[in-house]
Length: 148
Image (cartoon, rainbow, N blue to C red; front, side, top):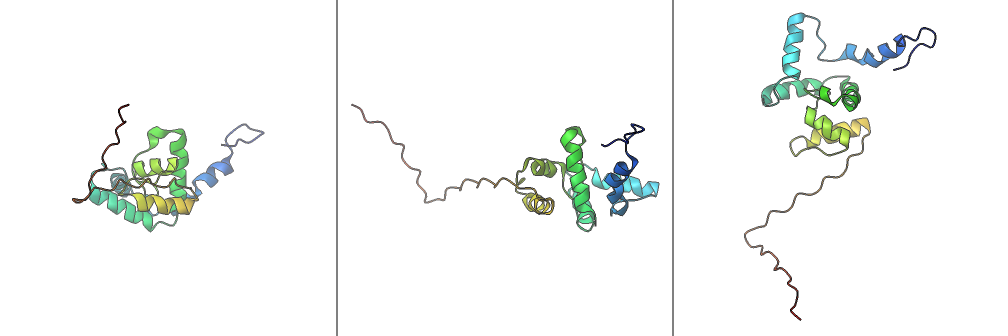
Protein backbone atom coordinates (compact mmCIF):
# COMPACT_ATOMS: atom_id res chain seq x y z
CA UNK A 1 0.00 0.00 0.00
CA UNK A 2 1.32 3.45 -0.80
CA UNK A 3 1.91 6.07 1.87
CA UNK A 4 1.66 9.84 1.82
CA UNK A 5 5.30 11.05 1.54
CA UNK A 6 4.71 13.92 3.97
CA UNK A 7 2.72 12.31 6.75
CA UNK A 8 3.94 8.70 6.31
CA UNK A 9 0.29 7.65 6.78
CA UNK A 10 -1.47 5.24 4.43
CA UNK A 11 -2.54 7.05 1.28
CA UNK A 12 -6.25 7.73 1.74
CA UNK A 13 -6.92 7.75 -2.01
CA UNK A 14 -5.25 4.37 -2.55
CA UNK A 15 -7.30 2.84 0.24
CA UNK A 16 -10.55 4.26 -1.13
CA UNK A 17 -9.81 3.16 -4.70
CA UNK A 18 -9.01 -0.36 -3.52
CA UNK A 19 -12.40 -0.75 -1.87
CA UNK A 20 -14.56 1.36 -4.18
CA UNK A 21 -15.95 -1.68 -6.04
CA UNK A 22 -17.51 -2.94 -2.80
CA UNK A 23 -20.15 -0.21 -2.84
CA UNK A 24 -21.75 -1.82 -5.94
CA UNK A 25 -21.58 -5.45 -4.76
CA UNK A 26 -24.82 -7.43 -5.04
CA UNK A 27 -24.19 -8.93 -1.59
CA UNK A 28 -23.77 -5.56 0.14
CA UNK A 29 -26.28 -5.14 2.95
CA UNK A 30 -26.58 -2.53 5.67
CA UNK A 31 -29.35 -4.00 7.82
CA UNK A 32 -27.73 -6.14 10.58
CA UNK A 33 -30.16 -9.03 10.03
CA UNK A 34 -29.44 -9.05 6.31
CA UNK A 35 -25.69 -8.92 6.99
CA UNK A 36 -25.97 -12.06 9.15
CA UNK A 37 -28.04 -13.71 6.43
CA UNK A 38 -25.40 -12.91 3.78
CA UNK A 39 -22.59 -14.16 6.03
CA UNK A 40 -24.47 -17.42 6.52
CA UNK A 41 -24.93 -17.69 2.75
CA UNK A 42 -21.37 -16.92 1.64
CA UNK A 43 -19.45 -18.41 4.55
CA UNK A 44 -21.39 -21.62 5.04
CA UNK A 45 -20.27 -25.19 5.34
CA UNK A 46 -19.17 -26.21 1.84
CA UNK A 47 -21.34 -29.31 2.11
CA UNK A 48 -24.54 -27.23 2.09
CA UNK A 49 -24.94 -27.43 -1.68
CA UNK A 50 -28.14 -25.37 -1.80
CA UNK A 51 -26.59 -22.36 -0.01
CA UNK A 52 -23.41 -22.59 -2.10
CA UNK A 53 -25.51 -22.52 -5.27
CA UNK A 54 -27.54 -19.54 -3.97
CA UNK A 55 -24.35 -17.60 -3.24
CA UNK A 56 -22.86 -18.45 -6.62
CA UNK A 57 -26.09 -17.41 -8.38
CA UNK A 58 -25.98 -14.02 -6.63
CA UNK A 59 -22.34 -13.62 -7.68
CA UNK A 60 -23.12 -14.42 -11.33
CA UNK A 61 -25.48 -11.43 -11.41
CA UNK A 62 -23.11 -9.10 -9.53
CA UNK A 63 -21.68 -6.14 -11.49
CA UNK A 64 -18.38 -6.29 -9.59
CA UNK A 65 -17.87 -10.06 -9.54
CA UNK A 66 -14.43 -9.99 -11.17
CA UNK A 67 -13.18 -7.17 -8.93
CA UNK A 68 -14.32 -9.18 -5.91
CA UNK A 69 -12.59 -12.31 -7.15
CA UNK A 70 -9.43 -10.40 -8.00
CA UNK A 71 -9.41 -8.85 -4.54
CA UNK A 72 -9.86 -12.29 -2.96
CA UNK A 73 -6.95 -13.74 -4.97
CA UNK A 74 -4.66 -10.87 -3.99
CA UNK A 75 -5.60 -11.14 -0.32
CA UNK A 76 -5.25 -14.93 -0.27
CA UNK A 77 -1.85 -14.83 -1.97
CA UNK A 78 -0.35 -13.09 1.03
CA UNK A 79 -2.59 -14.66 3.68
CA UNK A 80 -3.72 -18.17 2.65
CA UNK A 81 -5.51 -18.56 5.97
CA UNK A 82 -8.18 -16.14 4.66
CA UNK A 83 -9.19 -18.59 1.91
CA UNK A 84 -12.73 -19.62 2.85
CA UNK A 85 -16.27 -19.03 1.70
CA UNK A 86 -17.65 -17.96 -1.67
CA UNK A 87 -15.94 -14.91 -3.13
CA UNK A 88 -16.35 -13.72 -6.69
CA UNK A 89 -18.55 -16.74 -7.33
CA UNK A 90 -15.87 -19.32 -6.57
CA UNK A 91 -15.39 -21.66 -3.64
CA UNK A 92 -12.11 -21.60 -1.75
CA UNK A 93 -10.73 -24.69 -3.53
CA UNK A 94 -11.61 -23.17 -6.91
CA UNK A 95 -9.80 -19.93 -6.06
CA UNK A 96 -6.78 -21.95 -4.93
CA UNK A 97 -6.73 -23.80 -8.27
CA UNK A 98 -7.17 -20.54 -10.21
CA UNK A 99 -4.32 -18.86 -8.32
CA UNK A 100 -2.07 -21.81 -9.15
CA UNK A 101 -3.10 -21.73 -12.81
CA UNK A 102 -4.77 -25.12 -12.55
CA UNK A 103 -8.09 -25.98 -14.20
CA UNK A 104 -9.85 -27.03 -10.99
CA UNK A 105 -11.74 -30.19 -10.20
CA UNK A 106 -14.25 -31.81 -12.51
CA UNK A 107 -17.17 -30.19 -10.66
CA UNK A 108 -15.87 -26.61 -10.85
CA UNK A 109 -13.76 -26.65 -14.04
CA UNK A 110 -16.20 -24.45 -16.02
CA UNK A 111 -16.37 -21.79 -13.28
CA UNK A 112 -12.56 -21.68 -12.99
CA UNK A 113 -12.17 -21.43 -16.77
CA UNK A 114 -14.68 -18.57 -16.97
CA UNK A 115 -12.89 -16.71 -14.16
CA UNK A 116 -9.51 -17.27 -15.81
CA UNK A 117 -10.77 -15.79 -19.08
CA UNK A 118 -12.28 -12.78 -17.29
CA UNK A 119 -9.11 -12.07 -15.30
CA UNK A 120 -6.63 -12.93 -18.06
CA UNK A 121 -5.10 -15.86 -16.18
CA UNK A 122 -3.49 -18.63 -18.21
CA UNK A 123 -4.44 -22.09 -17.00
CA UNK A 124 -2.24 -25.14 -17.32
CA UNK A 125 -4.12 -27.59 -19.54
CA UNK A 126 -5.82 -30.40 -17.70
CA UNK A 127 -4.18 -33.78 -17.95
CA UNK A 128 -6.64 -36.10 -19.63
CA UNK A 129 -8.05 -38.68 -17.30
CA UNK A 130 -6.89 -42.21 -18.08
CA UNK A 131 -9.36 -44.10 -20.18
CA UNK A 132 -11.26 -46.77 -18.35
CA UNK A 133 -10.59 -50.10 -20.05
CA UNK A 134 -13.63 -51.57 -21.75
CA UNK A 135 -14.75 -55.17 -21.44
CA UNK A 136 -12.99 -56.15 -24.70
CA UNK A 137 -9.70 -54.35 -23.99
CA UNK A 138 -6.83 -56.69 -23.26
CA UNK A 139 -3.88 -55.28 -21.35
CA UNK A 140 -0.61 -55.44 -23.21
CA UNK A 141 1.63 -58.28 -22.18
CA UNK A 142 4.77 -57.17 -20.41
CA UNK A 143 7.99 -57.44 -22.40
CA UNK A 144 10.42 -59.64 -20.55
CA UNK A 145 14.16 -59.60 -21.17
CA UNK A 146 15.48 -62.56 -23.10
CA UNK A 147 17.66 -65.03 -21.34
CA UNK A 148 21.17 -65.09 -22.82
